[in-house]
Image (cartoon, rainbow, N blue to C red; front, side):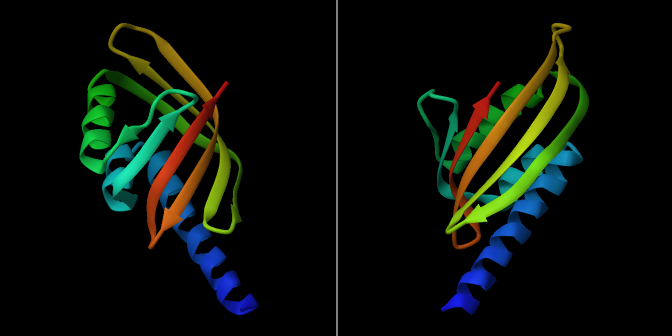
Amino acid sequence: METSQTAQEAKLLENANAVLALLGEGKFMEAMNAYLADDVKLYEGNNPAKEGKAFCLAEEQKLLDTVTAFHGYRVLSGPAVSGDTTFYEAVMEFRTNDGTEHKFEQVVRTVWKDGKIVNERYYHA
């Protein structure tokens, strides 16, 4: 049992690192298309969940349509894995078309099932 648990954890870390590599390149839609489950639930802090892959993709595209400059997505620590869950800390910076500079410092908790993200929460500072 120890071996399969280690193999499962290794696969989760591989998936998390693949997502983070895409995010680091600003490829948010690509990461979401590849790794979100159809019935995913995404939470921004304590806000109600955005439910379903199609809805989450549409909402992300609305945000991305306002971005005029992407300054980066840097992972500060992690990812770490516990069971079916990964965690990491990151900073995302970008400018929107109204001239506002955004900086999100966040910890992200991701629950995985069958290689896909089924539940994710972003804790922002």
